[in-house]
Length: 114
Length: 114
Image 1 (tube, rainbow over the protein chains, first blue to last red):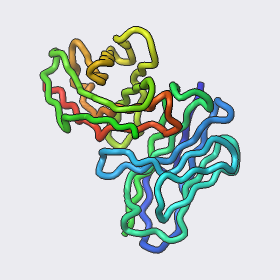
Image 2: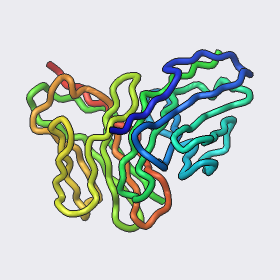
Image 3: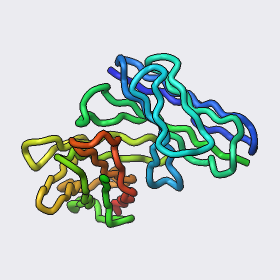
């Protein structure tokens, strides 16, 4: 069966520090991968998605970037964190083809910026 | 543009009573509709989806959802609520004619009272 792992579960970082959040998927090949941010326990904002290695689409301009160095690895990064980057970051995957496929989520990383 | 509306931020229901969480949508083409549940500090869990066919879709944990094309709605239902059903519920949509990713509603907090 497929599983998705995100780490760390929680992270406290000072303003201006760099960031690297990692997400890996097991048990499937060539998944679509997604990064979301959830603010205040409510709506999800899609940040990035990837349909293959090295292919990244950004949904909103921001202080963050994403990379996909391997088929089942998705990394969210920042060079200098802002207070507004605080939030709950969720990684998700879906089967590579078909708009009717659901996305499956990891357990998230809660990021607090001090 | 595709959109999802969850008109109720909060739904309270007594244990053992039926529950309904409302969702309406707007998309280009035929809709692909999804329901997710989120427990505190966890990722979203996929409950069920509507792609085509029978308007009543059955999913995990006894949940079902009714697709109504004329009302562009996809309400989540359960005949008998459990206290453990208390969580945040998200409706999501993607249009078959759109290259856009999933669009999520703002979420409905369900509280089942013992």
